[in-house]
Amino acid sequence: MAEIQFNSNLSSQLSKILESDEIQPGTDVGYELCKLLWQYHPLGGKLVEKPITMAMCKPRLYNVETDPDERVVRQFEKVWKRMGIDEKIKNFFFVSRCYGAAAIGVGADGTPCKDPLPTFGLREEDIYINVWDPLNAAGSMVTDQNPNSRYFQQANRALKISGKSWHPSRTQKIFNGTPIYLEYQNSTFGFTGRSVFQRILFPMKSYVGTMTTNDLVSQKAGVIVAKTEQNGSVMSGIKAAASRFKREIVKVARTGGVINIGTKDDIESLNLQNLDKAANSARDNIISDIASGSDVPAVLIKEEAFSNGFGEGTEDSKAISQYIDGVREAIEPVMDYFEHLVQYIAWTEDFFDALKNDFPEIITEDYQTTFYTWRREFRAQWQELVEESPDKHRESDSKVVQQAVAVFSAVSPQVDPINRANLAEWLSNVANSTKTYGDIPLIIDMETLSAYQPPPPQDPNNGGQTNLPTGEEEDQDAV
Picture 1 (tube, rainbow, N blue to C red):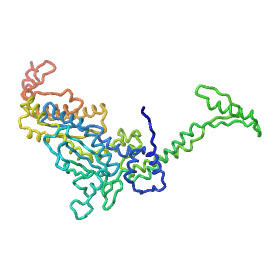
Picture 2 (cartoon, helix red, strand yellow; picture 1 turned 135 degrees about the vertical axis):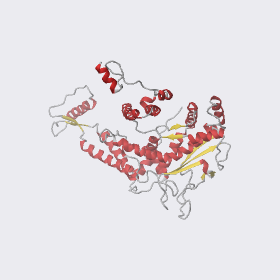
Picture 3 (tube, rainbow, N blue to C red; picture 1 turned 90 degrees about the vertical axis):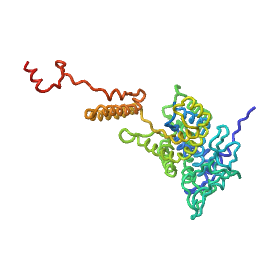
Picture 4 (spheres, rainbow, N blue to C red; picture 1 turned 120 degrees about the vertical axis):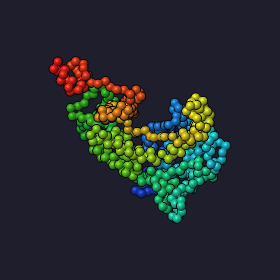
């Protein structure tokens, strides 16, 4: 029979550390304390994970120019998802933010880790990806502290994990923050970047105090104060029993019930109104201190709705979007590394042969030439974090099309038929590039349009031509 065991050693250890009087502003954080804060502190997960999770909340958009039926991109995306690359990259940056440094390595069955990573011929089932924290790579990611060295303040190229060497082509290393000269970090066991908790340990401790306050208030909020009339200075047994009976009635009363009290009795809740403003103000100030000491905006730590900014915009959401763009810039090199790796695994020679059989008129080169063509044409971009509503999309698309129509109307009467057809093609491309009109594209026959001659304008009175010579118009008037 299974048993449920409750182990409070770690949580009590965190409580003892955070309640210690030895923690003051500027106190250093070590490896074990960083782990405890990430695991158990209410804000630890947000500070470590929230920026990375938001930056990678939407998959990247991929495009290859020479891609028959988009099969090249779909094959890449299928392999990427099956290998769980996104989760590996997230964990990589989680560890880096928590401790200050992290490493990730790509291993392949049948190939020693000290050898370069193979390229062509990689199989998905042979590949494994490991994420290492500073304890796994202790002493291996220490930066060069020689000011005259060409590798000054750079991590060692070759990693050693539990005594096993890994070739630089297989690994990626990252620091959270810039290493400071001769500044040893206890959280990473070396001269590296620093933990996101480094500057905010003291306000993190203070935040636990606000939790204690909330707990005490929640316990006292349900206390009922019963003011009853005293029946004299001497309390007999009967009077005491009557008082206990009154209190019991108040205690068991529920919504919809009716109780009877004396004219001089009063029942009310414990007055905690004076605590509300002070407790909320202290909590907000502590969160502001944590946001100031870390790189995470306070609005993300609080998880509150974005407040409306000036006019129609939302300034909070714009600021968050700019912050996430900066996080994505840090993630970009790691994404590029793994995108190149997945290309070798996804675009195999068997996949190439199948595609060439289906599209022989498009795929005309050999395997490696076509592979490098796909890689050269491969484009990846992040999706917008803040998306416009469908109504705003339609409104902006309508303005773009209206401006294009105005340009066409102003220029087309002054050009020859061939250039007028080119203008019409440009106008259709503008309309087709919008989300509103792109689903039903406007297709124009350029050859027919360039040879088309519009009929002369007609006289609305008798249907005759209005462009007759002046003399002929006078003769008709005379008749």
